[in-house]
Length: 173
Image 1: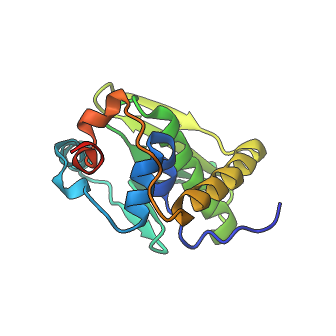
Image 2 (image 1 turned 30 degrees about the horizontal axis):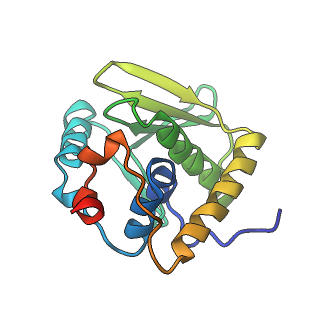
Image 3 (image 1 turned 90 degrees about the vertical axis):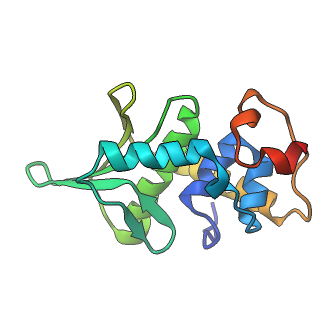
């Protein structure tokens, strides 16, 4: 597959692709409602209080990793994402896969392990970057770019998650 220009892609857009194309389009056109969301505030509070000693890493203004651990014994880099619940597990997984893929391709970091941390349930799930995942990410990025290029946002599809969405008022009121 041809090299894609991914300058306008970041982890949040990968996440939003799986949640809602309308939300993805609005966010990509600089309409940011997250600061008004109680759910987002709760998630930030959970991160700040559960993993106090860990620092977030912003890399190239594209990926914002909740925390990184270097395991010197087996020479691996562990990428951790903290999530409030498993409701959007597929979105979480692909956001983490995007981060892992970015570090592999753009920073030449090998031996990356990814983990989704769910502190409310005290669970941690390993995510593995495979060749198949990398190919899927290329297709997803192309679809995201197609959505972003549209003149208008995609037609809203009402889902159960809409009521708690930071963009609810833009879509339904």
